[in-house]
Image (cartoon, rainbow, N blue to C red; front, side, top):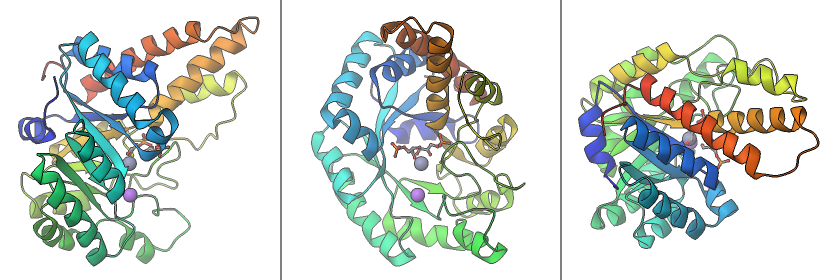
Length: 308
Ligand code: G3H
Ligand code: 13P
Ligand code: NA
Ligand code: ZN
């Protein structure tokens, strides 16, 4: 059953978080819905413009609709991840998404406000929830100065004005995570002092953490043992950081990289160990099963198991 993120976040705030998982393929949609139903855990199924471009927007939505029939007890929201205005309008017009992200985080404050508000104004007419982003996630790298670094994090003194002027429904923040398999180059992890101040200024307002993958070291090693060449610097968000983030108002945790690493691990091991085979349905089934197991563990970590 499709449920608004508003309802999901009101229930989870401060206690547990909703996994928001990026999907690209049929196997991932099966794995996600099967795990959500089995764990009785609510989730967001989300698609980036890249995913929509790869599979076709209609193909992804048709698979999600099919999954909602096959796994009819699953409780979920359908979300556009990292959209522009045109992606967001397209998602709203489809009538299928109940949540969109407008990502104008690389623009300056005023332009971000203008672009976000444009999407909010349309989305709210159709009861679609809007996630916006303030702060620049990807730019926080090791080789830039402290001043530049802190300028990329979300500035806590801007968040109230941003939320008030845009009327957005949730806020993605840049507090130290980044997308991909190589987070936290150097020693910095999540900046909890920044997150705390954001929460104080936006009490009970849902905060979103992008770059939420854990980057399982065992999977990285297993990929490399079967011909992969992932750098040893691959690392992600720790379970303790996730738990602490939840207690500071993070309601939605975005996960994409982990599902890609899992795909690479299953397929590399499969073809490494059985080089005589070539049928996609055998590793495909293994991936679905491994994906389901991965999500069951993720729901437990987010304390979302049993909360649907
Ligand atoms: O931010 C979300 C994903 O990690 C990026 O996915 O390759 O579909 O843009 P993408
Ligand atoms: P990861 O790269 O950590 O999986 O983050 C995904 C994300 O933020 C999608 O929007
Ligand atoms: Na961004
Ligand atoms: Zn993201």
